[in-house]
Amino acid sequence: MIGNKLTALYCRLSLDDGNEGESMSIQSQKAILENYARNAGIINYEFYVDDGYSGTNFNRPSFQKMISDIEDGKIECVITKDLSRLGRNYLESGAYIEVFFPKHKVRYIAVNDGVDSMSAAGLDITPFKNILNEFYSRDISKKVKTGKHIRAASGKYMCTHAPFGYIKDPEDRNHLLIDEQTAPIVRRIFELALEGMGNNRISKILKKERLPRPAFFKQEYFGKYFDNIEGYYDWTQSIITRILRNPLYKGDMWLHTTSKSTFNSKSRGYIGTHEREVVQNTHEGIVSREVWDTVQEIMNRHSKVRPSNSGYENLFRGILKCPDCGRSLLLHTDTRKKCEARLASYFQCSTYRMKGRSACEQHRIEAVDLEKAVLEDIQKNAKKAMKNPESFIRKILSGMASQSTENADKFEKHITKLEAENADTDRLYIKCYEDYSNGIIDKSRFQLLSAHYAEKQSQNRALIEKYRAEMEWSRKSNVDALLFTKNISEYAEIKQLTGTMINRLIEKIEVFEPKVIDGEKKLKIRIHYRCVGAIE
Image (cartoon, rainbow, N blue to C red; front, side, top):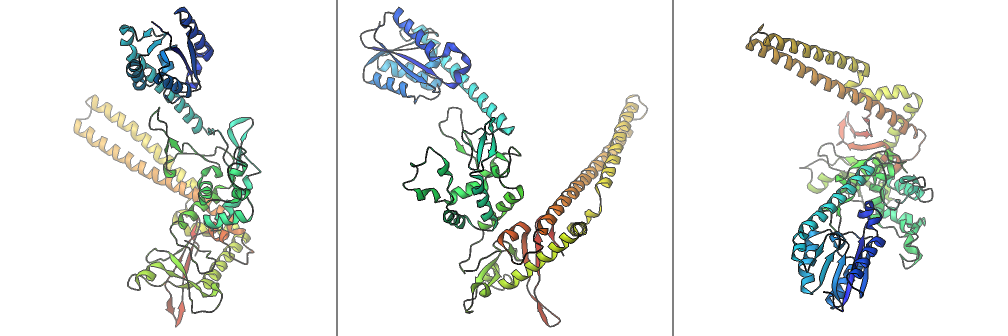
């Protein structure tokens, strides 16, 4: 029996219920509940409506207001269209129906499910219906998650806002287009990183050049996000790192960056960058793949090598290696020399510096001597590459490995022959088995032949894998040699080293300990160029 207190008619709708049609709409729920209340003679009622809220989350504004009114003693009855409108988490729904409502002497009615807390029979089935409602929510969550995963894996951009440097395609909201307003800032960041600059220096240069950070272009933040306009030019190292580390800017896309442990979890866990799946070629990159990959290597070196405070611009940061111990050669300054930092600077093995000659030799080289030697080697190879590219490529390939003398056609012929032999062996095995089945040969003879055929096929398969690997190596070697030839040709007329030049062309430089030859002290360096290694 309903008294003089308020009756709460509670309605809820979420995107999960979208496929239920008009029967699940807020208007439909209101009509059903109002009709039920009038037929039951209830005139003192009030609607509590949550439109767009999931049933797995009970932190809904109108629901919480209804709970507050119940605790204040204003409500004596709660009516919903069905149990799922109250919630889809069977533990919390059960706690409200079986504990909270009885404690506050509130009657609960779910119209379409035939549930009335005044009837014990109606409540017997309630826990099972609540479990089914949660299973429904789990199923919907799984389907939505799978759908998003499939779309993202096919290269669809699923986030609400386009990342910095891009805009959403007006004809396809899940495709990205380069934003000509912000993309130049992204390119500038990569240019500075390619020169070997760390994030701190990059941030200072961006501020000096008055290049605004991403928040400047977000209209909802404009005029609110910072206390003054200078804040929009105050780049942080974390922003720069996020841009430089994101494969988005070379045309790829992370599949997921966060994940939820359970379907009704309110927080999302962070997926480490090394554990994320990458979908390739989803859109046009702002920078080339070569530039992006080179910047990653530079950043990895920066995290391990301590910068110098000598005043000399170290162009070889993280590149110089000791061929004996494998450690880096670090930059130092001879303070006894009263001259400019460049002339007083030298590189020395870090192991020798820390542990002395018992651990490793000095491997010392003056900065000006190193610059001169590297510049001359780049100039020499660049002129050769530009003058006769074919001859230069052949020289590179011959130095990379002996397999370069082979060719893809020869490998292909070997593979075709071996595959044909394996097919013949299959037929021989079948014939052998038929002879064994018909009693033409005995069991021991069959086992001996079977083992012979299996061994022969195993050897052939190993050779096929070897030739395929050599074919792939040969193909990649030619691509690498062509790319390097193209890159180094650009520097045929250079007069001075730059960080960008060194980072684009060189992987590492080994500095050997000086030796006395014919009474003269000689120091050898070996330059390992990107993709092709050392060019003797």
